[in-house]
Image 1 (cartoon, rainbow, N blue to C red):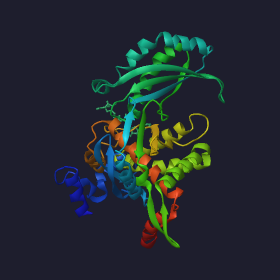
Image 2 (cartoon, helix red, strand yellow; image 1 turned 45 degrees about the horizontal axis):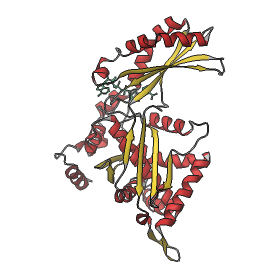
Image 3 (cartoon, rainbow, N blue to C red; image 1 turned 90 degrees about the vertical axis):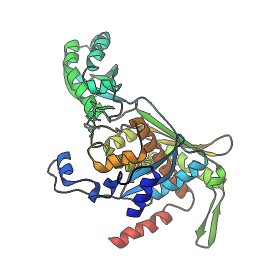
Length: 386
Ligand code: NAD
């Protein structure tokens, strides 16, 4: 590990010692852990591996991945190599806008309350924009206000105000929750109702990232050892097999759950390595996968005009490079340094690329030799240790 770290530091163009947190015990000292959560009695270690071969928007990236499951780092790295042959991953991100929800109860006339809120929209937004001067200084702040009427619920109809908040390089939960709490009295005054919940939504569907890739069909061909001699797959066979496998997930929630779990193998590993909130990312991903009323695949696979395999992953990406644990956890700070990310959007693009690569690794294995061959040889090592 020490030798690898020296090589990694060098490859990333960093000074010796800049990634030392990866080698210090557990990457997190007792005093730091004790300040992070409650009733601390220790620190729990997980392996930190490096995803290789990633080219994202034309730049080389070495990706830190924290995960307990074998074959994820290898699978993502291998697929990144195939994608590299097609020019690498392309990512696009929307503005880092989060949604805060304010629930308004005890309203006699929901429509009238909604109209009043619209009349006072500019005033409410101007007020919300003053709540976080630091965020405002960095270009963030209140962006929009939407009013929704929830027609049916176990307690009858009620009103919800959505505060759209640009959180720049933060994950944004604290910033948005604070803004919702501070805006609540004014919303009560305008509507005459009673504000109940004031909390961000993890269905961050205004903060999306899209990663795409195209793999030359010839790169997909391979030969493997079968029980009765070598088994060979043409590029076309692998490509079409991957598209058929994706179609299963696109059409069937039972398959889509497992398909998306494969995506999250890659996504979560980077989210955890950077000290981000992986429950928030998980919640957002699965809610987004069900946005049309039926749970489906987060990715799409097809072939382009030249017969190459093309893939795309779109998902919410509420991650930060400031705030939360990102600036507290020494190994998380080193992880951000290794990737050289300057904005939360950049980090989101890397995370989605790893998710897409990991999705491809699973689909390729499932569509050809099956998942167990590669998985079990690595798994056997763990069993032996246990
Ligand atoms: P935070 O409050 O620690 O940091 C964000 C703040 O940093 C901003 O409000 C701003 O004042 C400041 N800042 C400085 N430079 C900035 C820049 N360049 N861009 C943006 N802000 C900048 O963190 P947060 O991101 O608001 O909240 C994240 C934490 O909230 C995580 O620990 C998460 O686990 C937790 N959380 C999540 C949920 C949920 O997902 N439902 C709910 C509550 C809390």
